[in-house]
Length: 149
Image 1 (cartoon, rainbow, N blue to C red):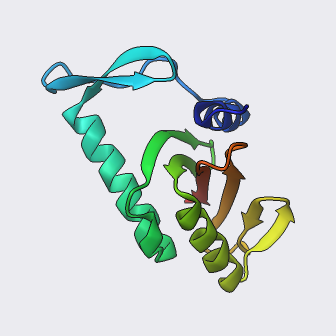
Image 2 (tube, one colour):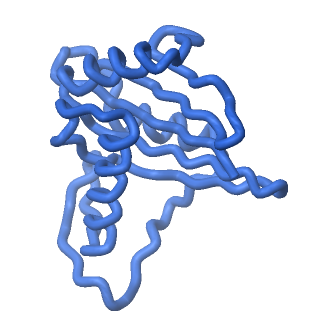
């Protein structure tokens, strides 16, 4: 069975800029969280970042069923020409994944391969959305990649 973190880290490796150590400020209060089978510290700043990323995702695609998405991780990569790629991965319900699929199809994203939807490139950049269902039908992982300057 593929796990939600497996999907994200596969995409992370594709960007080749994934850091094993999260950025954590000394001032941030933290709590313990479980990622995979490891206990990790989750700072208040990281929680705010997760909430902000979820809000951006919901606003970008206007998906009401995605209010409960949980960001699994985020990766940024900046090229020499200033182009920035940001990949955000979310654990989502099946209803959220269904709504995202319907929205991107309505926005004229084209399905480049099963579960991968790409927007047309514009002056502002482009977006890609990856939707992968859990094998047991319990949910999905939705990844949003945005590329722009």
